[in-house]
Image (cartoon, rainbow, N blue to C red; front, side, top):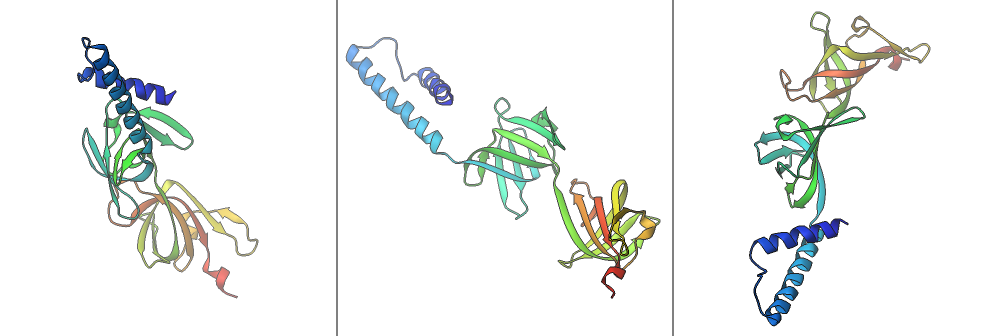
Amino acid sequence: MKNRILIFLILVGLLSSGLVYAQSTPSADLNEAQSLKDKIASKVAELQHKEQKAVAGSITEISQAVIKIKNSEEATYTIKLDKVLTKVFTIAGSNKKEAQISDLKKGDYIIVSGPADNKNITANSIYKDEQFFIGSGKITEVNQSDSSIKALTTEKDNYILDIETFTKKFMLNVKTFNVETITLSKIKEGDTIHFVYKKAGKEREKNRYSVQKILIIPQEYFIK
């Protein structure tokens, strides 16, 4: 079905460009019909051969016709947009909602699918999603007044983790080995922390994020 539609669109394009004429001899009609058939076959083969690709990253530049994104490996992709053909959706949890190109902005995390030529992609579909990350490390400071935690990760990166009202906070009970809900006052320097955060593109400073969930392993767990 897709091939029939594709052939029809190509045929319309070729007709409108003047490759087929209303008045001609039978011999010319035959030759031009064969030529048209060859052009259609060639175009279909070209489009089918073109690689379909899906990439994800954060928007670094955006205009009405082009978006540039950078992925987690710092590779940059150029996304070509079409106001009619490019479909945009936002994803929140398990829900998908149709949106517009104008709803996208710099810093948004998107997933793009469509025909690709190296790092140039013609977008068929764009999904605006939330980019979640996980980290682990040692707590170096707990700021009760600012509701934040400083942590040194296993990769030796320093993070500031803001504890929000929506942050889910858990701690391992070293006596029962059950995971319990806690308040910030239960957390102390030297504890191990596992955390989940998302990049919103509006962070106050580098490596400072609002955390979605934390799990604390008290340092007493490691003391025998």
